[in-house]
Amino acid sequence: MAAFQIRKIQSIIVFIIVLIAILWLFQDNIAKISVFQKNTQQFDTTKEETKDITYLEKIDNFLIKEYSKEQLLLHTIEADTYYSYKNSPVQLLNIKLTTYDEVGQKGVVLTSNRAEILKSGEIFFNGKVNIQSKNDISHEINTESLIVLSNSGQIKSNREVTYLGENAIIHAQGMEMSNNDDTMSLVGDVIIEQDLGGVITSRNLFISHADGKKHYESKERTIYRSKDNTINAEMGMDLDMNENLMELLGKVEVLNSSGSKMNSYNLIVDQSNGGEVYKTNDSTHYQTQVSDILAKRMHYDAKTKKVELMGGVLGVYK
Image 1: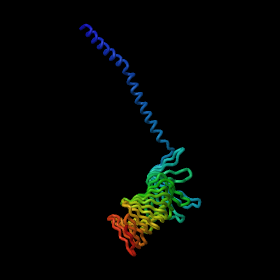
Image 2 (image 1 turned 180 degrees about the horizontal axis):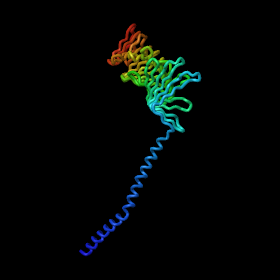
Image 3 (image 1 turned 60 degrees about the vertical axis):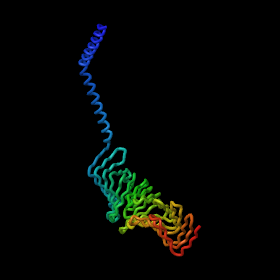
Image 4 (image 1 turned 60 degrees about the horizontal axis):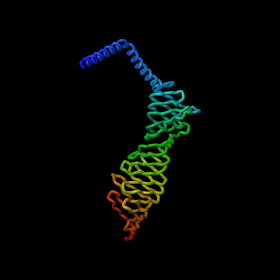
């Protein structure tokens, strides 16, 4: 038994000695294989980097001026970096585009971190875009694609637009603006998310910052939703962001979560000082589960839930 164990141990020792000898003989080949693998990895990495750098031309501190057929300056384009590609649009990084009107006066200035120039000459802005009008009115939007049409003096987008307004974020299906105007139209379905918590849904919103005012206006059916109330207005709304006043136009219906309902016309929602007060000087029909009241004027504090009906009040109680 002891002799068998000794032979086993001797066999293991011989195997180890043989293995060491084999490794010593082929150590150069093993090193070459390791180096080859490393070089192959480096080649693959370089190949990937080369694939990323496929532009034909790169220009830093790029500047170009475009003129009309009548040699009138249409716009200037400045960019930190210009890339041209064989089968893709020109890419511009950190771009500033300045438009000019027919008499050479500066119009709208657009800035963005990225833009593309197509072979047709159209310029597409991507991502976060700041639009500064000729009267230094600033509009900040986010969109996948915004196009500048130099010949017509129009700026527009047919993609979803997010407009960063005063005390609100506005979502729309597109936008249009003129180079020579301070106004902007957000087209299609519009959702206004107020910082105070209210949500307004409408269509085709007109934004005017002329004369220091900040008016958002729509002539189409509008719905305002707050914590406890939903207001439907048939003729649209006019929102004054400076005063935090919103006028809901035409026939108006106010639905409260308690089940009460008011019908009136041309309702003002006063959100100044953090409040929420509904008031109108038009005839009002107020209904609850136990009352039916007609009045000539109405004042309702949505925070305290206090309703004041005034002028020729006529009520029926169940």
